[in-house]
Length: 107
Image 1 (cartoon, helix red, strand yellow):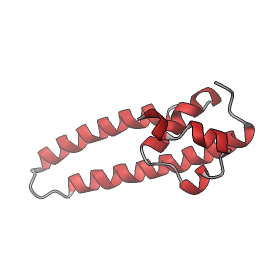
Image 2 (cartoon, helix red, strand yellow):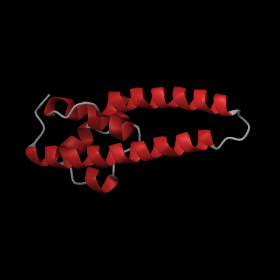
Image 3 (cartoon, helix red, strand yellow):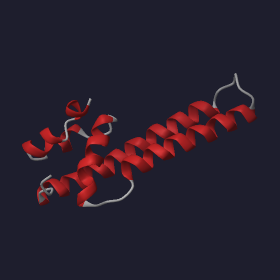
């Protein structure tokens, strides 16, 4: 695999930052929905929220941990597969890198 171009690297860092923000906002919304469930007892809400936080944390680690050029390709594929990428930023990637990281190639 060829190394990431400098211009793509700069865009990737922005994509990753915005994707992390989006992911965290999604998590917070999910936790809030759990905590607002009136059909569950406080203890049940706590347990469900705890389990959800653990699951979401594993996903966060898999997608976002580490910032290196060698991991950028797989991280970008994961970000795009999870619909976390900012389309405007993705359009700023080189045509080749955008095509190589298109999730359709990995489904």
